[in-house]
Image 1 (cartoon, rainbow over the protein chains, first blue to last red):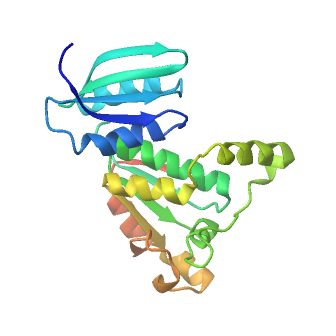
Image 2 (image 1 turned 45 degrees about the vertical axis):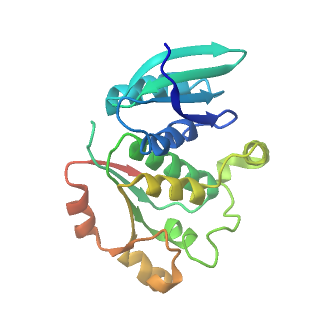
Length: 77
Length: 138
């Protein structure tokens, strides 16, 4: 994936509902088709982002975990 | 479920329940669902401008252990409930109304309330606003 990230949301150390709330806020400033990257340490965020993207029409294009940090790359619908 | 309104009747005024209300509201707002919060009794009291940021205590069931757990999470940087609610309002679609009966009970006017509160309404206007949405009592 060589497209560049438009916005990064650092939600490390934040618990529910902050990773989703901060992403919902940030997404407003991201044009359609652009990528937003989120870093989170809350394990609940994995299911939250799956549900949120499904519900809002945004798509997870990349997802990984490294040493307790979850990384999501979401394409703005 | 996508835009089904969520109504929260917020009766309780302890910090733990206020926080849960803020979290439930935020989650719904992040999903694009309209959120309507109806403040009653001690929930309304907590939104008074002169005390909103005070320590509102915890439900009795928390006990000392519960208080230590809550304090630890706050020390780790968890936002207080009124900030979480402010963020939810920024997402859009969150309305906070004071129950007019409770305003009478507490003998206050809208001037006494924090700007987070959008206005006052009675139970009828509340039900109309909720429509076929879900109602949570906290």
